[in-house]
Structure formats: C-alpha cells, structure tokens
Image (cartoon, rainbow, N blue to C red; front, side, top):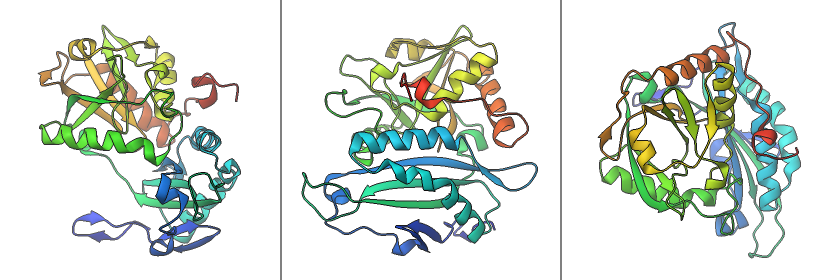
Length: 316
C-alpha cells in the first residue's frame, strides 16, 4: 500500500522490526541508559526500495549494503551476524504493509544494553521502511548551491571513516546547519590538509573535460555503495572515472559537480562557494549517470555489479 498522506507529506509505514518482532514504530525503542544512547554506538544502512516496471518493489544493491553493514559492526564491536536476517525482514515488512511504492529502508544495529563505556555491547537490530521519492534536485530540476565548509572530516586516527556509525554524523550535521544559515543548500567538508572530502550525507563527484573525478577514500570518505556504483557504471559507459585529491579550486572550476548517495540519489550542483559552474544546467555526464541509474533501479536494465569490498580495497 502507499503510505497515508498527512499535511501533504507521506506518513511512515507504521511497522518496525525490532529485537525479533514486527511492532508499531513507537515500540521500537532503546533504554535511555543504553550504550547506543550514552556513547553513540549504533551503525546503520540506508537501502532504497524501488518500484519495478514489472510490478512489486525490490531493495537496490542490497548485498553491498549488507557487506558494509557487517564491516561497520566489526569496527564498532557489534554483532555482524545481524546482517544475515535483513533480506527476510525487508520481505516481511513489505508483505505486512503491502508496500508497492518507493521507500527507504533503515537498518540499525545498536548497543542496546545499559552499560558503561567499557562494557561489552548487546546488539539489537531495528529495521523500518519510510516512503521516499525524488528530492527536489531531481523532481524539479533544481541545482544545489554548495558551500565549502571549514569543518573537517576526522582522520582515521580519530574515527574510522569506513564505520557508518551515528556518531560520525554529529560534526557534519553542524556543518550543514551552518551552511544553510549562510544561504547554501548543502556543503562539503575538508580534510585537515584542506582537501575536499565529502558532503554530510553524500559523495561528491566533479567533471573536468568529460573526466569524472571523486576524492580518494584516504581523504576520510565513507566508502559509499552509490559511490562504487557511479565509478563502475561510468567506466561501463566509457567515461574515464578516477579517485584523486580534490581541492576547492578544482571544484569551483569544474564543468559539472554532483552529489550522490542512497537517500539523495543524485543532486546536481549549480554553484560552488557562490560561483556558478560553467556547465550548469546542461550536465551531460550527470544526465547519463542518472538515466542509467533509473533504468537499472526500475528493472529496465541489468544492475551494474558492485563489489563493495573490492571498491574499498578489502579482501572481503
């Protein structure tokens, strides 16, 4: 079923999977004194659920998302075996709520027990599905006004970039709020060396003379599933796609800039640091990638194979 509409917006589908059962969302809670809430130990994945042209809905790139979830669990000391249950749980949530529209699946693995900073975690798995269509960047053809923040992504010695843990989003949240107060729609954060890293919830790509460039994972970038898909798909389309150090000067001078991620999908950028991009609004490389993406997610074309472990330089 399509989610009900409240005040012009789609309301959440009402059920959640939480600690072994389907329950109303309001019951999917953790204790106030849990390690997850006291110390921010909770990893998560966002997975898009796409309506197929042939009928039904399918989770997009589920396997690499679960590979990353397991890796995040390993890094944060949580039980990675939770990932094994997720495909069946998504099926149960879809069936129980008769979901037949695009959605966003959030999978959280949290340290649910009450405890101190050095206590071993007892893991709880929570899965929800929320209606999710296009953001206004694709729905209305708007371009993001992108700022370059003075906030930094933490180095590996501070926090592992590959862990998709809730605490890693506290700094980027502050950076985004500051950017919006300054009149930007979003922003990119830097490394301590001044290089461009990533947006608060998305990877940044730029196009220079038809060549697609994104910052290196070494620049404290979360190994994104959509990032890996873009690199692989661009190469399949004959586009030279590389990972390189990116400066603010390169970003401002680029022909195209685009943000991408599971929740965002794609957000074409019209200006960087107040400077309108020379290629806006044509953006042919971005358009080719967006067209390929929706052909694949709707089942009109085979999905590009994404080996998340290989894309991150991991053995598996």
